[in-house]
Image (cartoon, rainbow, N blue to C red; front, top):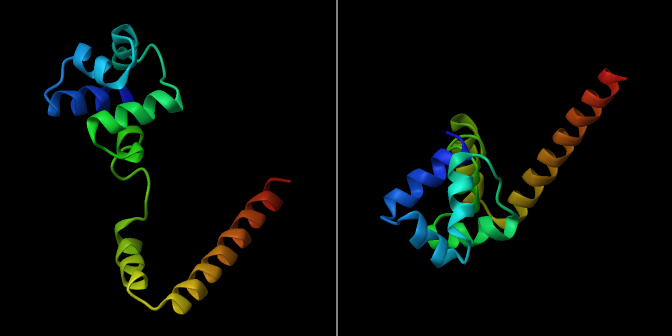
Length: 112
C-alpha cells in the first residue's frame, strides 16, 4: 500500500475527517487532500505531526508492514538475541556489522 492509501486508511480508522486531521496536525486541509491524492509529499515535520495525531509510528505511516524490519526467519533469531545479556548482544552486533560491511564492499567491487 502506498502512502496516500495508508494515510486515508489510518485517518478513517481514527474516525477523522480531512478537516479534523488537518486541524489537529496544524496542516492546511488542502495539503491533507494533496497527500491523500498523491499529488504532494509531506515534509518530515508534517509526517511527524500526522503520526502523532494518528497515534502511529513514523515507520507504520511511511512504510508497508513488511517493508522494514527483519524477515520472519530473522525476526525469531533477533527476538532470541534480545533476551541475551548485553555482552553477547554487543558481540552479535559487531559480527553483523562486519558481515554487512563485507557484503557492501563486495557489492561495490563487483560494480567497478
